[in-house]
Image (cartoon, rainbow over the protein chains, first blue to last red):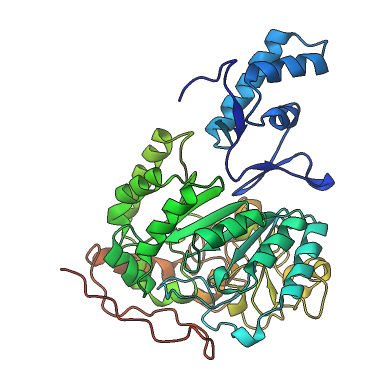
Length: 93
Length: 379
């Protein structure tokens, strides 16, 4: 599979969506169940709308978390997206 | 200990145009006249969501046989449930699929009986395979979660590579290779369906290699026949711990097969709230915790992992629903399973079977008719 880079446009895979009600808000609903989104994964996935590039997502997160190092944010975002793509819940738009 | 249900399996009808020789429906099915109304199901979905259920699996029978299927999907989605349709594909076309997606369907699981048309039709007892192939083409053009489910057994495991190839080309994101589990109709056909030890070994090798090769493109999940396991499966992740199933007439069960166990009164949503049934009813409490366990389960270090195995299988094979699941190599009744495995392995692999017991629909239902006699196989 190709690498995830700054220009990649990620989105949730078919049949995957973030929980909509209050009790499901940390859940990523997938065909075989639900994955609990820990830490920043939920915020990242909300930005994976099939429009924003990874670069844009990193910029937005840098503004949200100004105390974090931008390079660190980028490597975290790419790491999380790679894992979720291997898991089949994120794809390149 | 309080358990939160994760998923609700809604058997909205037992009517089905297929007659699969391993159908997981009970031998005694519910008539159309006894089926819950649309409003009953809507109430159930709302109650389930309020209890913390995340997923709704609409199944049957064939759920598309319900004239109100769009209303059911729409109501489930409005209740914030993840909507999965488990279907044979019969009754679906482009227009109905688009309507289901518009109503909020998240995911569709399409069943196949084989990749070879004549064999697929033989196992299904009807000519549905070609339609399923066309339907897969229609589904792949839409952005919806898509899983292909293929039930495997002794008579079709030789084509596992072709099945994986078919799924790879189909546009599905997931492939489930489900070895038959021996309940209901499958138990009737067990000696013809149970794979040999050698088939199973090759099956696992093939699937593991395909999982690695297709990582990130096609997710492959598989279920093995527990007759060959050393320890039992944690059936339904424990009785009444995560799942509940509602049959077409409103009976609430912890799984597909539990109705076979005599002496258990399963409450009905027509008479009790779903929450009471889950939290308070004696049927759901019956095998929660460990107090019911016999030895060797009671002192076994695996008891929190597999919960003593499947209660329905224990009853079906030993007549005692509290017995250790006989597939467990530690079970006093394990000889029952060993004897079947030995008999099957002494026979010829892929040996032809002449007398399938086909699933029939409940009497009085419109679809009830003897299954068509499939064309004889080329030998």
